[in-house]
Image (cartoon, rainbow, N blue to C red):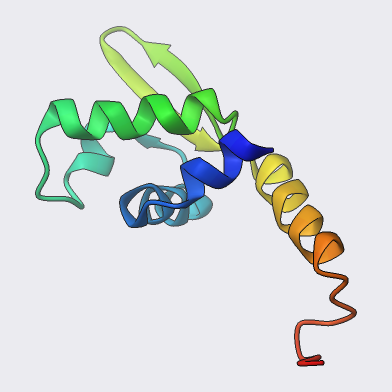
Length: 92
């Protein structure tokens, strides 16, 4: 789970996951949303893949990314459990 939390710690990776929540996207389509170099984004993609937060599918030379929502949900559930949060509105 540590790898997942580390992957979620960077705002660019969180934005990538937010984009993928809407639809499957190619690496090029994702990069259109950032002003970052290809190598920088590739590094972020590798971190997300290592954390098992995304799946990839290749079509020719294009790589498509999709969110593995179940992994993200498990990480969130583990945090909620770790902090013994009864509901998100409970501030005790």
